[in-house]
Image (cartoon, rainbow, N blue to C red; front, side, top):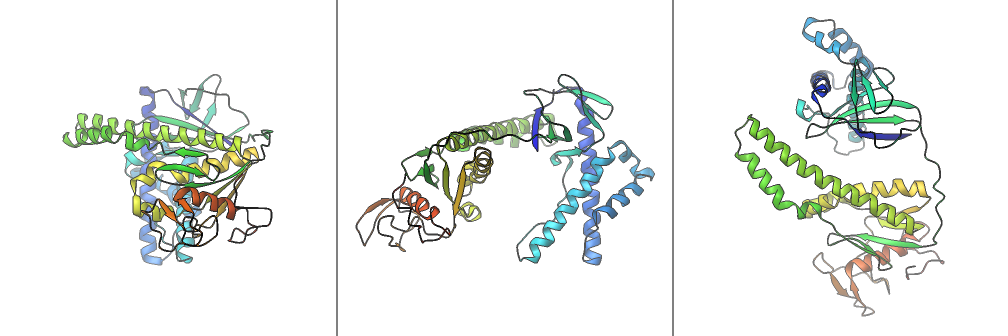
Length: 378
């Protein structure tokens, strides 16, 4: 399966799509309120099929007659999303994990609706029919495969995108094997520290734009609430945040392509991101480690590159990569430290990267390293 995303032309005709998204937000909030009342009374949630039947009955009433203008399949998808959210909540709580229930969403923050087989059609050139209206989009590439589903999304600025899911499968890229293997340690000052000296500096796009963001936020706060000037200021803030997000995504994809082209196997540490955010907050969010790992794994699967993760609780920074002694007294402020057993002076991140490389080569991802793997990186 492959998804194609295109931006639609901005014009007055898009008002109907905005109204449709707002209508789905009303359906969502009604269903969430119904689920919460039902759960308070009976201690369980309404199944997807009962919810769909209930919505069908409501559309016969005069109060909800305007719901008949919404595509029936997209309303069913709203019920399916809520059902999926409650199932995930109950499964997580059964395992003792905290998990929030589906929440109410204001119209301005409701983002999308999905059409399955009916209600849309790709036309010639760069046109798409949604309902009875025809819209144009920026067709940056040809769509391969048979279209199966279309999702119409709206971002915080109000621009609308279409995401077309097809049955096309990418073939093997026939990548030339390089025989190189490396371990990498994530950091705040350096985005990646390689066991072989291959380092990637942290771009910190949000930090570089923090002054512009602050000015835009102050300008937004000065405006009178519910005024047009306040809405213009809000859009200015949203555009700046979107630019930062696009820069970060572009950096992640380019770096993922670079690493998967250069190495046959990449060894990383499984990160405790929630704990890192509790300590450093905005710095961790600015780097987007989780998104980068997701994109790296996607490209690695296409190119035949292996990705190995070591346990998040392995003391990669505290363990001496030369003699294996563990320095329990090491704290987060120590960027360089000397081993008490062998006297080797270590750079904290480099030492962690070498240990990640060594432990990633072990048979069972533990401290026991297989005979064919030494502490020396490739």
